[in-house]
Length: 279
Image (cartoon, rainbow, N blue to C red; front, side, top):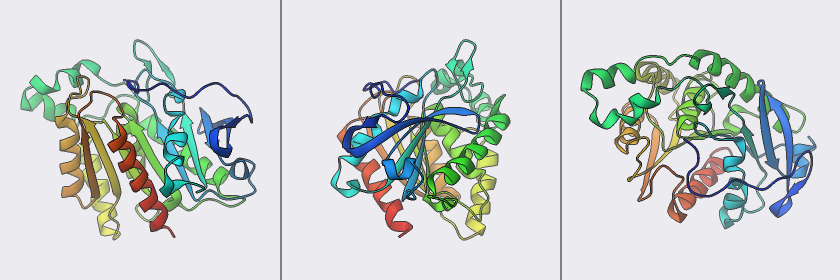
């Protein structure tokens, strides 16, 4: 579901300023309403972002859920003063689920720890309803964010980082893997997620590998997660590693939430490494 630990950022609309010289704006990308947080020079188009970070919230949550992430990460020495722009889209409303990127079978995921191998194998292979439409819209969102954050020309794909929490993590990974293998993103931050469409993901990872690419991925998960069982992230790590991705796996003692200072530190070092990659 949502972020769990820690609230979202405060109010502020159009071009109001946020902490640390960051501005906030409301934009639409790929048909999604989005909150944009970043340096005023990037938001007004006069300078390109060094990295654009798209953050997809969890099931039933809102785009404000991770509005404090820019402040949390930007306050760390390794990222201080770097031109990072954060784009936080809002998933559309969904009956019974609140906001959802696509139709997730919540009961099946909750029962995953006691599911039979057959039912589990089916669940992680079947394409969920609405995923293909979501995929199309998010590819459009990525292209529009690159145009917006490029300071007058399109930002290269390697300066686009996809991040997500829970259903947002699964969606961020799927979006990254459906970018052309010759134009991969900077990487993926996969917070408290689970595997979906594993055969499609394997095939897309193999295409990246054949193009000489090892997708950088940070996978994190709380060991006491009662919503998406902890084993899920281990399966994702194994799937990614077996197919040539460059995976960093970080666990924390918490539940279905972002985790504490150790997770923030791993996020900072992962983002800093992506900045160094493209330097």
